[in-house]
Structure formats: C-alpha cells, structure tokens
Amino acid sequence: MLWQDRKRHLGMPISFTQYSFDEERFFIKRGLLKTVEDEVRLYRIMDLRLEQTLSQKLFRVGSIYVNSSDKSQGNFVIQNIKDSRKVKEQLSELVEQNREKKRVVNREMMLETEDDDELN
Image 1 (cartoon, rainbow, N blue to C red):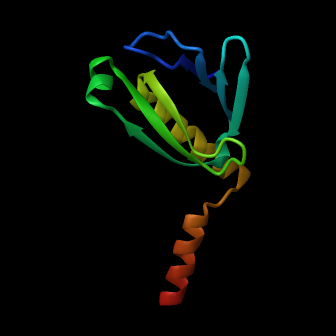
Image 2 (image 1 turned 120 degrees about the vertical axis):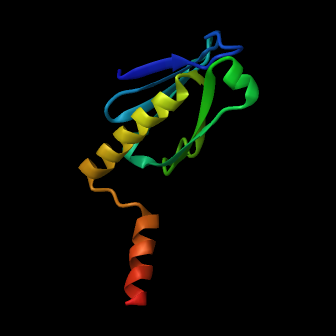
C-alpha cells in the first residue's frame, strides 16, 4: 500500500471505514461485524476535488470528492482524512500515470478535440 488512513471524527481515527490505495487501485473497507470492501481502478477516476469546512480545518482533515466511471462504486467521497491535500495530489499523479499506461482517453478530452476539428 502506498497510503492508508481511517475516516476521522474530531480528528481522531475512530471509525470502521478505512481508505487505502496502491499503484493501480483505490480501496474502501467499511464495517465491523459485516465488512464490505470496494475497489476502484485508478484509471477509472475522472476528477478529484478537495473540500475543507471550517471544522475540518480546525482538526486538520479534509474530504476528497472523487468522480469515477466505475460501475459499482460510481462517485464517492474520501471523508475526513489527514493530510488531505497531499493525498489528493499523490492520488492525482497516480491516476494520470494509470490513464497513460492504459491509454485511457477521457470523453471530455475527445469532445474538445472534436470541437476543435469543427472550428478548423
């Protein structure tokens, strides 16, 4: 694992939700008695957004909103994690590397290219 953390409450990792990622996948593990683990391939992540409320800033945590093309997970939030800006940047770099390695083209980029072609 390149990174892992728990969802935090009041800055403390007292939750049964764990987040982690390696070079190719992002994992969300939830639950105590019944555990569910979801996985998203990094190349399926389309966009990342970091948000920090005032209370999150006070406890030095943040939430990363993930826009994903994954069928089972869809869009999701990595909630209340420490070093959220650093994690977002690390995840963003890995997403780009995986998209290049898999030669995945974003539909948004394809539409921009088509629009540019029509103008010329």
